[in-house]
Length: 103
Image (cartoon, rainbow, N blue to C red):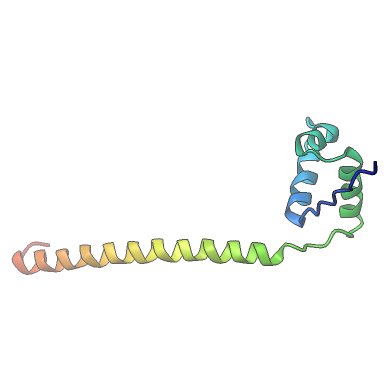
């Protein structure tokens, strides 16, 4: 009986992170491969391909979506901060009218 081969495609970010981890002096590439459940030879090949510039960044769209989501979170926070500051400013203006000589 012939077993079916399973082909898994790993994105650039996964490969890049795996390679960066293997560059740590106290971490063995074989342990990284085992933890990621990939064959050590695959990891060594990725390292070589990265050095040779053969691994393409095929995850640009995913990162740009992530960057957009981060920007939206930041905008919401800034809008909330702006609303709070406007409210504080309104209170200070009212206080200034109530106590005109105090500075």
